[in-house]
Structures are given as C-alpha cells and as structure tokens.
Amino acid sequence: MRAVCWEGKKDVRVQTVPDPKILNRRDAIVRITSTAICGSDLHLYNGRIPTMEAGDILGHEFMGEVVETGSGVTNLQKGDRIVVPFDIACGDCLPCSKEFYSACDNSNPNAAIPIEMQGYAGAAAFGYTKMYGHYAGGQAEYVRVPFADFGPIKVPNGLDDEQVLFLSDIFPTGYMAAENANIEPGDTVAVWGCGPVGQFAIRSAFMLGAGRVIGIDRHVKRLRLAEQGGAETLNYETTKDVVEALKDLTAGRGPERCIDAVGMEAHGTSLYGKVERAKQALMLQLDNDTALRQAIQACGKGGTVSVVGVYAGFMDKFPYGIMFGKGLTLKGGQCNTQKYMRPLLERIEKGEINPPDIITHRAKLEEAPAMYDKFEREKDDCVKVVLTP
Image (tube, rainbow, N blue to C red):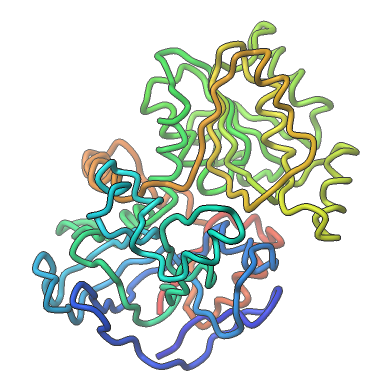
C-alpha cells in the first residue's frame, strides 16, 4: 500500500509499505477514505517530538471502511463506515473506566519510554512516535486499528466524510477545551490560536453559553474563519500588547475564560518570545510558553485557563505567581476523544455545527509532502488539509 512516511526533519515521503494485518483478536483493518494533516503532525515534521524513526507512517485523523475484523470485534462488520479516535484506549483499565481515555494503561506497548522521560505514560496514539506506541498512522491506504471493539464509531447514512472526519480529533479537542474552561452563561472567552482546534474551541464555547469569544492569531484567513464562527478577533502582530487589549475589551477585568490552542510552537513577537524560540532551536528547552503565559496574564480573577495546545516537556519562567495571585484554575491535557465522539456526532446531525467550514485545502494522498510544506509555511492561507488515498 501507499503511505506517508517520516524520513527526517521536514522530510516526508509517500512510499510503498507492507499492508497491515490483524495481530490481535480486537483488531480491525480499515481502508482509509479520508485523512487529514493535524497541527500536531507539524511538531513531528519540525522534529520537535523525540523518538520518531525513519519510515514511521504518519497520521492520526482518519476514517474509512472496515475490511477485516479480529475474532473479538463483534460490534463492527465488513463494509461499516467508521471514524477512529486518534488516541488508542482499551476501554477496560482504571483510567478508561473514568472516561480518562488519553491516560489508558494498556494501549502503549512502549510505556517504559515516556515513564523514563516524564515519569508517567499515557495512552498510545496513531502515527505519533515510538514513545506513543509506534502504531502506524492513517495517512495511508489502509491501517490496523487496535481495540476496534471499543474506540471507533459508525457513521450514519446520509453524512459524508467531511462532515464527520474531524470527530477523530480536532472537534472533540476543541470542545473539550471549551468544556474544561468551565464556561458560564455570558462569559467572555479568549482563544489563543485560530487554527483548526481553535476554530472548534470558538464554536464550542458559543455552544456552551459564552457571551463573547475573542480569537487571537496573526493569519488573516484564520482570523476571518474565527469571525465567521462568531468571534471578535485580535491580530497579535498589529496589536501592541495583547494582554492590555483584552483588558480594554473587558472593562479592565480580563476574560473569565482563556483557552491556549497553540502549545509548544508559539510564535511570540516579544523579545522574550524570540528568546524562547532561540532556546528551542538550541534544544535548551522543549516548549515556548508565549501563548500560555499571555493567557495567564490576561485571565480575570478567579477565572480558568484551559490548555489543549501540545506541550512536550519543560519551559522556563512559568508565571505561577500570577496564577496563584489571581486564584486561577489551570486545566489541560490530551483529549479523551471517545467520550465526546457520539455527543458531537449528534450536534452535527442536528445542524448545530458544520465541520467542513474550516477546510481550506483538499488533495490526494500522493500530494502529502507538498501539503505538509504548505501547511507549515501557511502558503495560500492554509488552515486545514484533507487527503484522500
């Protein structure tokens, strides 16, 4: 089969690789019909996440048609259209019993690696390094789906791929970001990063009762998409001080809820932000906390900062004193995708949200290397790329 393979920093290639096979009774083989490039894939593309190996198959946002199942998979049949969650969970362990699927104890066969590096291990993920289980990803013609009797959901008749594809990751992630922000009716919510997850966080914040949402980014296309979702916007490159601007927009109080949908590769135009970028380049620190720091500084007293942007390790000069002084709640983590897929599918069916609104580029799988480059450089205002084998 053909698959998108990582060969090194900023080097992805579409190559011929062996077809996947059933290895466990709870496995399924899925023929991919649609897959997407995620912002988290760019962390791999840029060499930010350790334990990638040449030849690794990328991709954790995908859906398709079941072509084979293991003996333990009785909920799926050949020919079923399914969406597969990006995080791999068994459904049986203690974290899974608490709907904490991103911390599954059983899905990561390489748990010793993150335990040694970070002191703990979470769930495995498709196409996301040896540290996260070394499972082949879904930017391919076929994929093996472990624990297929638990994670995937069937697609109802009448819904096309683009309506449901993002249930695999970015829609649940954006929704969880809004949910974790503890939004109360009428609250003002500020969202750092108007990429795909930020777009869904904006729309989800309104679904959860926000009175105002303010999107913060520098890319005109992304800001326009945020406005189409109902948000007011700030361009941080043309705004002298984002924190002061947010205070001005909220009568000096600051937003009650702040969402960091950026993570470790924040751009940061301030002197400190540029220093952080330099330290990242020199491998003196893994994460740039520009967006998170601003969110903590801007958030109103007693408010909540919700973090879904990916962070990989340590950062310098974290402003804990400000958070402590204002009595802020900080909540973050990988999305527990399986918890949200069915409820959000119902919202799609009811017409409360139209996920394809954020798609800017569609391409064939063979065009993936060019699409990675385009997404990384934001050429042609690239926001979200969907690939078809």
